[in-house]
Length: 486
Image 1 (cartoon, one colour):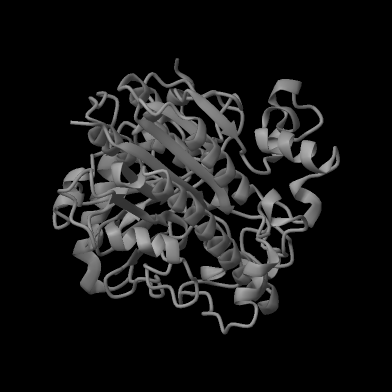
Image 2: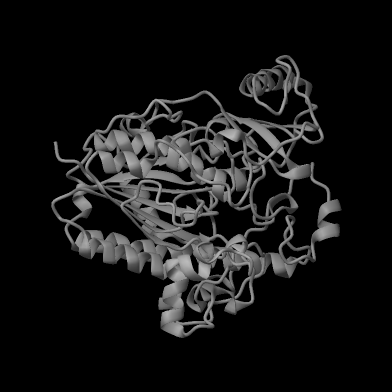
């Protein structure tokens, strides 16, 4: 049977609920809604270690975080893995191309792709004056190189005056065609033009947005600036202590304390999402016009979410739904995977580690023993199935370090620095407004989920448990030794 073309559309910092098909009251995403209508939506998809590097390690290796070694955010740690998503698909006869964000080390590590048109976004660690020539974004990043060729030596994404982790928002300062989101689509279309038509292809279109800076073209800001937007969710368990301390810092972990700046952040975030959606639409239309769509499988997901001022929080790395729940869908053209049950929703808890074995299954390729994830094609065929009863997530994050167990209906959180625990009934309280950790009626369920976490942490080097209880305050490095193994 002919191998289908595979297109993985990857986004950065996109919440699982910030899409039209997910029921968001404000965000408009007509092209992604179309894919969802033609495919299978996984509405309980998570990023088990929700920040850029760790999440992408799970995506590219199919491993859970204690095996790929990245349990937090740390730059400049080498990526040395025997088996990668692109490498295994290359072995299976695919021509493999990535356009956009990799966020690996070294910067031009291809992780098994035949070719990479690289744009990692605005990375501080790759822009400092002391960075070696070959690792500097101004040299090694294809988008920055192109932008300077087009607009001059001084052109930069920082021309907006917005940092890459800031809640500030303003429209793009150059013509729309120079925006990084457009560039990823442009380069993806160029790949379709120059591909070898005799071989199946794997294209990873890896977009930077809606990760800050919130700098979509002005047309997209105009779509939202006069709308009455839904306010952020703030739980009854949250305090304003951090917000009062950090709410006027432009890149704080709390987001702004000023309600108008919160609204501007929402406008900028939603503008970036709709701009992204329209550029994904360009890619879909090109697949149709080049008569590739019907022979292709499209997977859409994100590396992690964005709190967007929920619970007085901003950015990611937290155990709450805005940060760790992500979009995931699979859609197939009419000539491939006819067994997929289109227009359906699967409620199984799934994770980024599941993408690699799913793609290898679609390609008819063997799955390496190092892979921890589950293939999801069987769930796309029968969405009532499940691949795991619960998922362990975590993030090394200083005083905010956390571990969590999530199921299809609830979540237990343990803050490993302080020992604080939380419990949320997601079936009744999807926005985590009420912490029921002290509710006597939940005690047995909390004990069960705590036991699952202890089971997950046995034999971990940090010493988070002795096998019977959780031990708070243990040193928690962002990277384990396994991340640097050859």
